[in-house]
Length: 222
Image 1 (tube, rainbow, N blue to C red):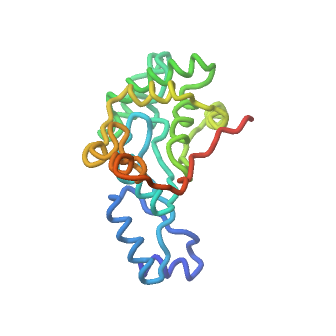
Image 2: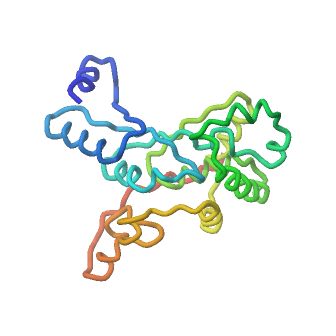
Image 3: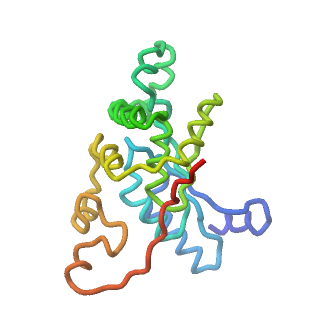
């Protein structure tokens, strides 16, 4: 943290980010920085999409508590969130290009079919729905997006105006099984306990007043 802080002081770096690191490591690093008067990490980069939600167990709650932004990658499934027609039209060479162990996962196809149904009903693209879903999940979320075509850029922009209803969110999140596990589910049930007010103990064992936590950005009409 001292070396990173020196880069900020020298003007070579404006803010510090960290990627693909356990939540407890980031929390300890930031606490050390606070104690020593050093620059803390202000953004976390990690894999996050509707089919791969492991980051929600510990990393996202840590980011919210630390006031850190999120810069998720793989939001559009790393090329796997495609319509059934697009997948059918792919050549073997195109499919081979995505057959990387940590990228090629069967649940992405299941999720793609789910996203496609919602996209068709709304008259928009499958990637717009995928991006809109991530933007509803946490405050200060700035997805890292790639693309080579104008229509891909337009689909990303269209996502800013999509306001998914609770039923659509539930459909997306139930398509691929995801469990917060212990202690999240012990404290808050199937949806976990990101905030203290989500825990059953604070609901049953007294009356508490809470500061309203930061919210995800609202959709903006284009």
